[in-house]
Structures are given as C-alpha cells and as structure tokens.
Length: 304
Image (tube, rainbow, N blue to C red; front, top):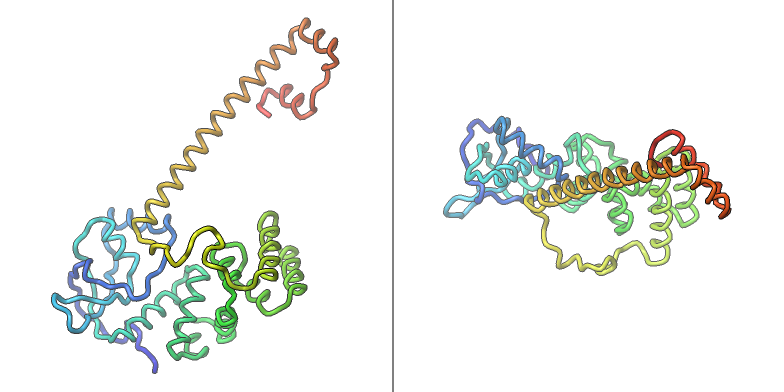
C-alpha cells in the first residue's frame, strides 16, 4: 500500500490548533543550536509556514496527529504559545506516520542516524527499496545498504555514525567485511582524508571493541541504563545548548586569564635577565641556558 503525500490531500484551510492537543507520531531529536535559532526566528518574525496535522478519531475535545512541522510546533511550545496555525488534512494514523517519515527523509539536511532509522521504519511497514527510494530521492542501492546496516544489528557502527565518529559510507563498508578488511577500510579513509588524528585512533578502538565484544552495545556499558533514559524534550535541548554556551564562555575567560599570567611571567623573566647580578648568579649555579622555545618567546616579547 502506498501512502499519499501531504500535498496529495489538497489542504485549503489554515486554522489555529491548540499545541497541547497535537501528538507527534515520529519524534526527531534536533540540533540544539538549530532549534534555538528557529525559536529566535519565529519569535522575531512569526511563523512562515503552518504545520500540517490530521484529526484523531473518537477524541473529545478534538485531538490531532502531526504530519509535518515538529520543529515549528516545539518552538511555539517553547515560546509559551497555546495555539499554532495548522493545515488540517484527512489521513489515518498509518498514512500520517508514513507521510511524517517521508517528510523527514526528504529534508536536505538530516542526521545520518535519522535517515537510517526512518528508512528502517518504512521497510518495517512493508515498503520495498524502490518505493522508499522514490519517496526520499535516493537510489535503491543506497536504501539497501542502509537497511542492511540495521538488519545486521550494527549498534556500535550506528552509534559511531550518530556521534560523527564514522562517515555513513565507511560504516557500511566496515559492516560488510572482516576485521582485516575493516582495518583496510580505515586506512583507505585516512588516505582519502575522511579520518585523521584522534578520530582515526577512536575508530581503531571501535573496531577492536566490535571484534572483542560484538556488534551490539550493552545497556550499562557506558555506566547508564538506556532503558531508564528519559526522552529528550525541546526544553532539555535548549538547556543543553545554553549549558554548552556557558561552558565555552568560561573556557575563554580562563584562557584570557592564563594568557595574562604568561605575559606577566615573560616580562618578569625579561627584567631579571637584564640584571647582570642575576645572570651571574645563574651562571654560578650552572643555569645559564634555557629551552630555545622560551628564549625565543622572551626575545619576541610574547607569551610562550
């Protein structure tokens, strides 16, 4: 069965829908900075495009399922708005979920992990690779590779893609080979400048752990049971973004303080080295030389 796209339902009317009566069938975790920018943009200039919802049956008062516009909905909730402009279409829950998945997959910018999971969900709902590829604008082979990564239970590789450690194509290549082939794939990625430095070392450790402990990640492996993890809300994302911004500001202040102290030390060293008595004392103690890097810094008048 092929679900219709939201455009094929020919919505014609925009109405205000209470934000607390809208259910998100296919929630997405979004970048905190992107979400904060969206909230600020909507607060300044308003909503450019209404969200799309469908009525839920047998609900009183009337409730809705979200088809498209999770970010805009969460931004309105963050701004304490009680209602949001919405286009109401006719679709059952199954069609609504599929349309939401297709909308997410078709985005020009999405996280690879979102694309993988949503393709997996479409497959579970009976869509073949050709149908999925037609909906989201990629090749059937690409859909097949992603689905294969999910079907092989490659939780470690999926997590590596999600955290940005491995490119998606490299994770797929590693999943289809043995340990020796995985190391060759890493070396190819290094020569092609896809992995360098700390990421390459971390990728090697990942491959070693995958060989030693298996493809799946145990719930308490990182000291926290994922089954007890609370769902991430828009408010939590904003708090996380603000916390990171505050941390970065503190790091800048510490760096400026350290720079000031180093400059003071350099000036003190320079003044002491201009004192003949102090230089004579250093020579008497066998301390007349210093590291070339420190000496050059003192000569240039900058902090090391």
